[in-house]
Image (tube, rainbow, N blue to C red):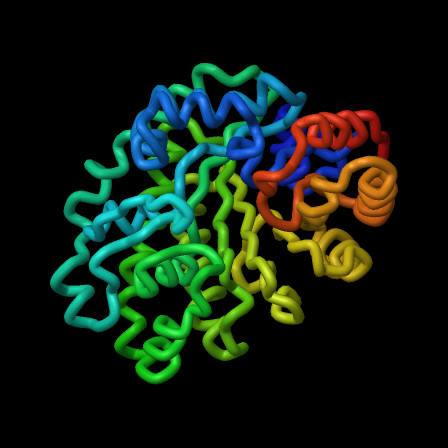
Length: 353
């Protein structure tokens, strides 16, 4: 048992059934906190916030000060990787991130994208990681992250992010000309490897790959563009950083969750709110000895009260027999009352396996 790292989250990610589940929450730094809006305004908006180590570090630390969370996740935004490759990134009120020009052909890739300035453009993020590594309490784990290649590609091709798009443009390109689309995935795979390696060098103790749009691909292309790139990223990280755990989160993958962990070799599988915990406990914790993370519905956190308490208890009971990290099934919603987050953290911290 002494071989396990000491921080609670790192122990769980290493495959240990801990005395209580560690807890952190996707988008735990963000719009539901009043202090976030003050910092964002001081930074001059979202783009300034993401590119200012001072302000990005402050926003990352805000939920750590408020709640007794076991990890801090770097505050940055998925499209920053696309911008570092050559697209222009802007944020429009009510529209979220906008990337231009959209990348919709092999010629666009060759004309507009390059790895040549990747680290110059991402240098503020690496500095944010260094600041956080020095500032966090000794028992709090620092998580770095990147968008998985397919998900970042959806931003780059559609020219915008989130659920406003039905992803018709990227799916038409990817489905009708898969070999022409492949170079974009290959470029993003290389970029993600380098991006995460630099975060680890700056002090990240674990990393998460967000595959927010795993659920929109048919099975053969899911294996080609969600599984294979993530497996390549993890394999490359293991060469230089064999002790850094990787969490993979293929949101809405449905039945394709089955076999994903074996194929990618991630240390921990992030579960969205639809994944049955009985399946995850048997197939991931028991059969593989690996960690699962999740999967409270973010709307339940908005609701709070007895319904939330009962659902948290159900999740804890279902997942407590193996390595487990408590989280949500997706990010915190901006309508979430902070007092509900406080109640959630208190309940999980009071649990004993």
